[in-house]
Image 1: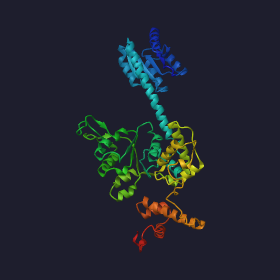
Image 2: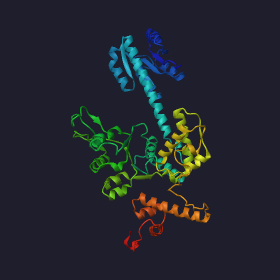
Image 3: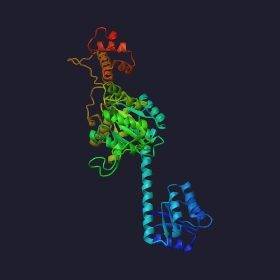
Image 4: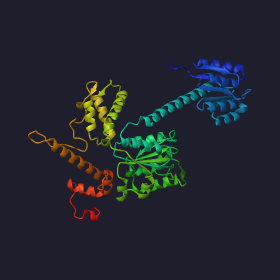
Length: 472
C-alpha cells in the first residue's frame, strides 16, 4: 500500500502549526513541524518530504530565504507559502523564486486543501515524467545498442561523437535498418535530451497540409483555422526535429525548409513577423539523395545543408553475426510485453535466421521473432516455427543447381556459389547506386575498370565497345 504524503509545516506561531497539523491529519497526511527556517532545514536533512507549507515572516531564517535554500538543495520539492494579506506582494515574489502557490491568512480550510491537492498532483506528474524520461533515455543509451559487427561499431562511434554537438546529421540506409532509433539515440545522448524530440514522416502528410504542419498558422489564416497552431518546427524548439523520408518533400516546400534552417526562424501561415527557433535537425532517407539531386527531384542546396555528417546504417544481411543477438533481444521483449512463458531459440533456428536475406532488415526480424514466439507450441522455437522456409536461399538469392541424378560435384558447387555470390553483390551495388558504376565500384572496393569487366563476364549488362573510352 502506498504511503500518504509527508508534509513539513513551518511557522513561528505554535497555534498555526497545531491547526494545520490537525487539519492535514484528518485528510490522512503525515506531518512534521518546525518553528522557523533553520529548524525546517534540519528536518529536511533528516528525512524526505513531499511538500513544505511555510510562513513568510519568521525569525532567524524567513520563508523567502528558506525557499531559496530548499530550491538549491532540491529544485523539485514543492513549496506553498502561507502569508498575511499585507505580504501578498512578497508571496508573489516567492512564486518567482519557485514556490508553487500561496494562501493568504486567515486561510479557508477548503482553499488550502484544494491548493495542497493540486500541488501534490503536480509533484506526482513531475515524478512520473522523470521516470518516463529516464526509461526513454535508458532505452536509447549506447549500452543498449545491439551489434558487435564492425559496421555497427562504426555507427556507435559516429553517434557518440555527433551527439554532443548541434551538427545536422543525415542518416541513410534501407527501410527497417533503424534510422529513427539512431536519431533518437543521438537526441537522448545530447545536451537537448530533456527537450522535445519531434519525428515526422515527410511522405505521410498530404501535400496540401505540409506547410501548415511544418510552420503552423495564425487564427483566420485560412478557412477552418479557428485558432492559432504551432508547427512542428516550433514544437521542436530547443530539441530535435527528425525529418524521416526527407526525399519525399515536394520541391516548393524544400525551399522554405532550407530557409528555416539557414535563418533559424520560421513564419506561421497568416503572420508577417518571423519567429526564432533553436533546434537540431536529423534527416533520414532510404533513397540515394545524390541521385535524386541529379534527377532534379531534390534541391542541391538543401542536400548540402543536410549532408554535414552522413551516417549509413548497414542492412541486416551485411551483419549476420548480429542476427542471433538481435533475435534473443527481441524474444525477451515480446515475452515481457505479452506475458508469454519463457522461450528459447534453438541453434537450428538461429542458423536459419542468420541465413535469411532480411529484405525488411531489423524491423522484419523483430516481426518474425514476435510471430514465432506467439505461435510456437513449446518452450523452444525451431525452424518450423519461423514464417519462412529454413531451406530458403542464402543472402542475395544464392542457390546451387543440383543435377537430376542427385549427385553433386563439390568443386562444381563451389564454382556456382562463387559465381552467384559475386554476381549478387555486384547487382545489388548497381541497384543501390541506380547504375552509377563509379559509386558501385567504390562500395565494392574495386576499381571501376574491374567492375566493368566483371559486369560483362557475369552477364549483368551488354558488352559495349570502347566502354572505358566513353566513360560508361
